[in-house]
Length: 524
Image (cartoon, rainbow, N blue to C red; front, side, top):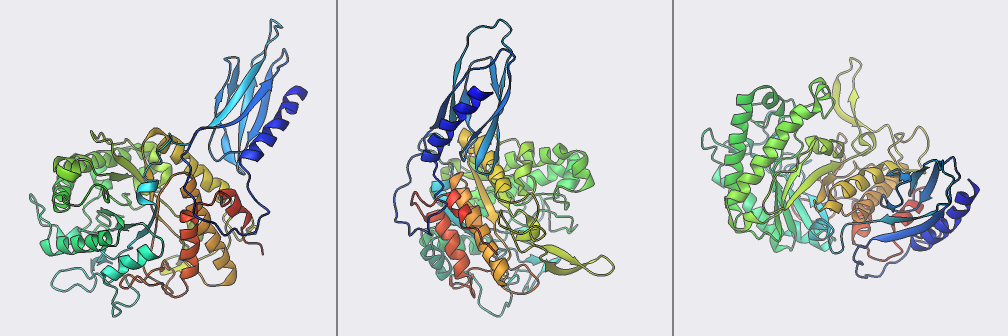
């Protein structure tokens, strides 16, 4: 349709002026400037004159958000899909059987969250995970435990090194550009028998002390129940067994009673902590051990997800019932195994305070970010990781990257979370993200690009994000070591990785856009 094609030209000119990607600029040296308040962006008015037979036409709009369209009722417009930093919307023009003169002006708008609202992006900013510091439960026992207590250093590469958290740990994080910390906690054997389910006081007090270290350093904090979920280990300590709960109503009732008792105790312990800096997160990566691939889950995904929806509501009700700061603090609830895809099965808990946020994790593509389990000749896991892919993103070589999991995929995931939740007043945060560090030149270049792109995209879509850090460098492949958990210093050569992460979130220069990061992808 010649008239329609002619009308696309000014669209590109206007959008390019508003959304310049600065692809040919050298790496900028940004100067701090305040972030502008988000506003609705009018991308273009497009005049359309349609022939009598109608038709279907595509219009491409450059925007980081899926636009809405104002139009007459004889034109329908698809929602569009994000691809290559653009949204392709399909216009279907109805037939004009009466041969009447008709015209319409289509106005495309990309609407970020309402002015002044960015979910929890300003609240948390860029976060850091304390890894498995308080997950002393390891390989079916309390590793290194003395007198029944978990060892705070048992997950560390060398427990002889002093990795116990100190005030210096959190002071170091603050100095390096992080503004919040997520402290994963396994309560497990520290929980007494029914019906009281009393939490060991020494364990509770140590957690309280470390939370205080973080607050003193000026960091926001998230605490949770972390490895209390059963991942198919079938150990009595892992009491949040969603598979059993989904198949046995009495088991589900018992677990919900324990959730209520455990979170009531945690909430009361931390009631004096301000709602302006402490958040509570009900669960971690609840799943049946199949991570969404088990036959039980695939057969009926909603069955187990409905159980998690119940548990999330019990958690919210338990915390709110304790009153004080707990009546108004932010609460986080995860999707099934914290997978963004499975948010479609979530029911957001009812909450009078209307301060419930959705927690998801992002390690996609997992073969690049987390590696794969090595198999021996008999097909059994060796306990080591292998990394079949060194590349990620549009400049990665075919065969060296996971197909279909590059920048467009990532943007689609983050954009959907923003449009479904954040734009509707429900915050979302990436409770975990990261990438196993490798040291060969090619892998390191792509890892740095991946980390920078993930964080910049998270900032663009108002998704505060927390870097996973288990303090490990070298070893079998679980190399997520950035910061020493005892001193707050950089680990090994981690500074260059931390620098791109903090740059991606904290830079406010208007020329430092997601398009710009895209233009700096490695080239080999």
